[in-house]
Image (cartoon, rainbow, N blue to C red; front, side, top):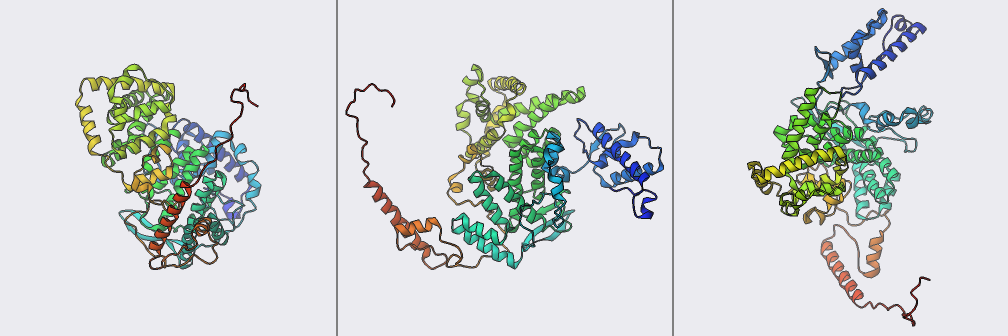
Length: 589
């Protein structure tokens, strides 16, 4: 907010005295913000700082005008409320997103300082006058100049205060999309590179090529391509589409919207690996706010981990309290174990009152016991990943034994494997392990006493978790956790999975269809796999759409496999020559 000082507006410029007064106020605002919010979870923005400045005495009338202006802005924003006790209570929506938390540089500055993060970037940014300012990512000098790609966003309808949007592909973008699908079918990444040279901001090409770069361990290029895709999509936003309100929705069933979900998810995964969990959490909240009812990428399996890593314990406990009644979050192993862990960390914060510490300790004890009773198969793999050897009573007891892992349904095995593989590092703290050990023995006492809760939990495990919904499979594929990927069912692993659209919804809403194509586009070179098949089968021809082509292709592949089996069966390996002196001294040459 640029304050309007008397004498500055009328002259159309700042006079020196006004500039000095404004600079002094800015220092006071920043100082008060640091003092009043140190060690708290309240928002640290300028508006909240203005609310905390009620004790600052301003002798200058101009400064009083600015204070009243800040208070007026704070009253109309509705982001925070000041109670009678002077404590600022957060009244924002649960999935409210802050713009400043979407920038990883802000988080890195808090860790390492602005000088270490920015370096010599500031002079370079002044030269980029034509670049559009965006929130999701910052455009780079190395990117091609942006021009309209043919993507637009439209407001579909507004229901009960929630606005529903959708991305749309114009005709020219649809033609590029068809060429991209041809490039994917060619199974040659070079064709996608050629397409990006002509259309540098085609989103699906950027997503697919990012996966190729990541597989080749070029993490920097993979991340850069994802950021370029986000920039392209943000430039197409509708004027009233808001990233922060939490009331804007996108339907994942529409293929045009999926790229935005996937780009955000891949971006937050890069942020988490980069060491920016707070920024990654903000992007996770953004994805969840786009479709909280269906959660197409199932980020609820990830948001607890990011909350713990970012030390946002209050947010994790709040989402559990507000959503448990209608979403049954306690039936997910990640929430069942992460929420009591969050309460344990809250009970270790000395700046809290004795009552708050006592309540957090009691809730942590109650919830971790419920989690161990409901999901006993988590304990032993978790201890194994933490390199902790349990005592004899735990290892010999059948409740936490190998039978607990074998007897659980496959869908539950995927959830537990995903949680252990992702969050085991958070449990390695000796204080956490000592706390966990205490309640493991308490649970064994309840099991030996035949507590009814134990039998009821066993019945729930057998009746539920028979099959996982499609969004969980999609999350496991995108997360690439080896433990969970190995537990995927055959119907998922047997079908091709594309990085630009993994496991599309079965009830997709298709707005335009791809025309039938008989041959690949003439400017695509033949792929290596096609040339390999042709070298073995001269009659092999990769054609799409021709009548009977699928049957001919299957017959050709069958003939190829038969020929390869015969070839392998007739291969004779020559034994290596033996030494004439078998009784040598055995020394290495």
